[in-house]
Length: 117
Image (cartoon, rainbow, N blue to C red):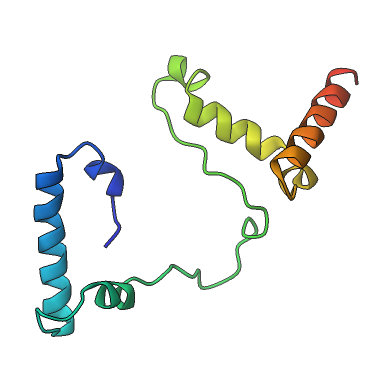
């Protein structure tokens, strides 16, 4: 149900409402739900989260996905590429900070120590 949501980001609200009606109708047909029942519980029952068949090595690391950019000249300048690459390189202790203030403090310490090494 949530496949390719990025394609819908620029649509007008009237087009989104039509797509929502189609989605709700298909959900009602699949589950044989009456049209007067609320659709939200029906949709929640249809949506399942993906669970891989075996544990993945990267499962415990919490890394961001680095987006693929085809043009080499834009790759190093694209925010989506640079931000995720830099955040993945940060130490785990820094990313596990309990608050924003703690994260900022640890980030500042990390940057100073890496600069003066």
